Amino acid sequence: MIAMAIMGLSLLYLLEAQTRSMRLAAKGRALNIATQLALKKLIDCKYDLLKKGFAVSDYASEGTFEEEGQKDYRWECHGLRFNMPPP
Image 1 (cartoon, rainbow, N blue to C red):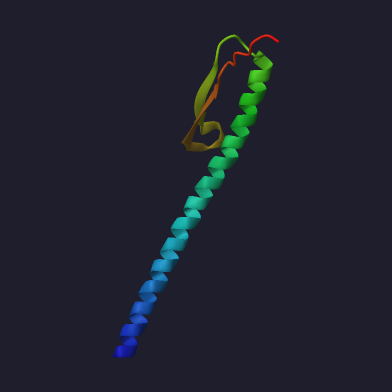
Image 2: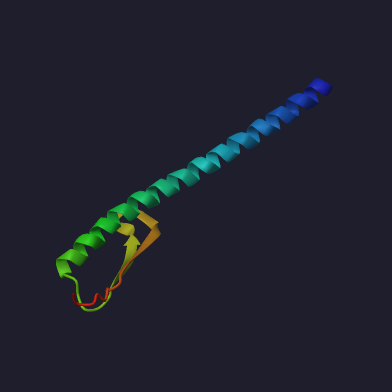
């Protein structure tokens, strides 16, 4: 009887560990997807800003990643104009 109780508790802890592992794997996958999408969009914003030139005003753009098939993620890109005194 005691052995069955120990085995039951052991299986319960193993099931909990497996569930935690699956949850962490899903979280890691989402973080990896978000990082890759952010890197791609950062490069796109950089080239867009270089193409438009450094304007007098601030740069702002936003959107979603539906084209990439990731509708749960959205992005915002901001570039502040810097005021540098003349030399």
